[in-house]
Amino acid sequence: MLLSALYFDQPCSRQDLSMATGLSPASVSNVIRELITERIVLEAGSVDSDGGRPRVLLEVNSDYGYVVGVDVGETRVRVELFDLTMTERARADYPLDPRQHSVEVIVEAILAGLSAVLASAGADPQTVLGVGVGVPGLVEQGPEVLVYRQAYGWEAVPLERLLRAGTDLPLHIDNGAKTMGQAELWFGAGRGTQHAVVCLIGSGVGASIIAHGSAHRGSTSSAVEWGHTTVMVAGRTCRCGARGCLEAYAGAEAILDRYGSPLPGTDQESALTALIGLAATSPRAAQVLDEAALYLGVSIGDLINLFNPERIIIGGWAGLLLGERLLPAIRAAAREHSLRYPFAQTSIELGRLGPDAVALGAATLPIEALFSGTAFTAKFTANAFTSKKSDRPAS
Ligand SMILES: [Zn+2]
Image 1 (cartoon, rainbow, N blue to C red):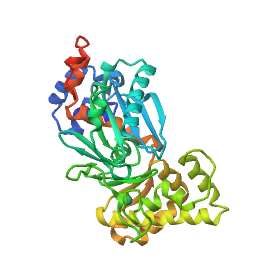
Image 2: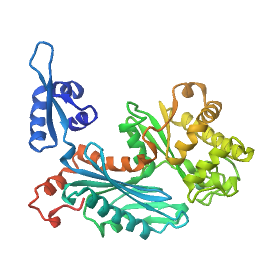
Image 3: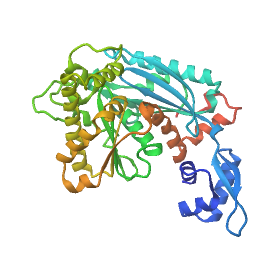
Image 4: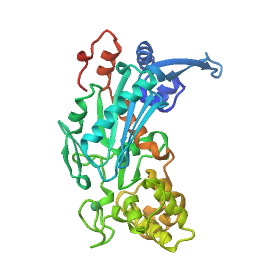
């Protein structure tokens, strides 16, 4: 509790932490003493207090360890290495053929990226707290982590087991919309909110619901398959096999498909950028984009009626590109398709962390484990430096 309070409000003093957490000054001093001994926390100067002794400021030691965030996108696998305060230290990108979704290719890219970022930052694998992986699709957090993505034909893919063959670092796998949501909640447009919906729009469409400050989980997964809710009865066929899904109108792949004519660029990102540029002169481009905004707005109206969020955050590479031009139209459609009272409680905003928020958010998963205490065993064993790799627990 103290470590997370300090992490989100550093630098601060022992007195500030006592006020923020409700713990007694003596308890705070004891725990902070332990955290300083373990070098997770450092003293960082002092400030004068009114009439009393100067207050010593504390901060989290960014060099205590590294975390890795992986974004398994539809068009690339990105692997990023961060220090503990989320300064990026290295990154590696592996483009994917958008029509090729073999699990083997993705596992190979993640493992290659892991070695590449560790080598490029000169980081000892023993100092890595864990690897967070954000994937498209549903992630079942059972005894074995399984990934389902109907659109790719992934049925119960044992991603953790497949990665385990190439690394013994602690692994945390979750849905990419959830990891992006956590990044925006911790560092971006979601800071300070308790109830939010974070919409991830890339090739496909997903969302993460934040309730009471943390991601809402269904019975097995944190993903909200918002992209596969129906916006048009008997509409276009979606990649999932059903008809009329939101994703079939508002995902980048669908938007480009609906436009139908060739666009410059070799990937979806440059094609969508070109389409948005064309909208001023091409009525067809403008129509496809306006319809995407309408369907997105209608579906955001549904989210508002269902969840009564304080904030709706639109992110993902396509969401950010589209939002720059379409946010007013999306807001108008959401207003027309939701009840006045919950709409008035909500703001609809763009994500603030850019298109890389999935990887950044994935890297918060091992930090979350550190705060909850579940990463300590691995870390302490890893940090003893005398230990061999085989001494380390598997997760
Ligand atoms: Zn669908």
